[in-house]
Picture 1 (cartoon, rainbow, N blue to C red):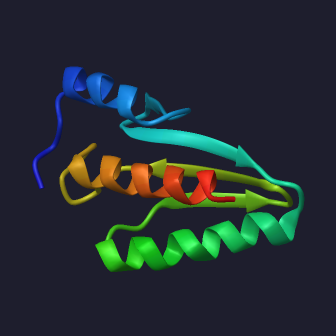
Picture 2: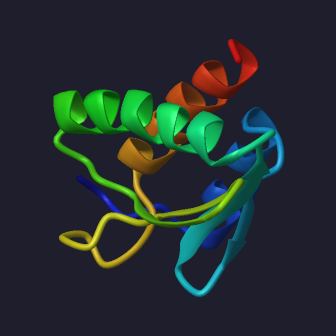
Length: 95
């Protein structure tokens, strides 16, 4: 995977809603009704991430899910990060 430039990253952020770029990763936070709903979404994301062989850095506290995406092997953001971000957005929209 080829690391994207900062200008490419900023342009691609227009294609994903609610994601921000800082600290060499793209980040977002989602809030759900309760822990069960948050964990259910995490499980769905986990299956998609495993299929892509690209795994998020994330944390969950009760009903909040924080996600950071970066391609560690490339040392920054790649197309893979935006692919997974779009999949995550699709899962969230379906909830």
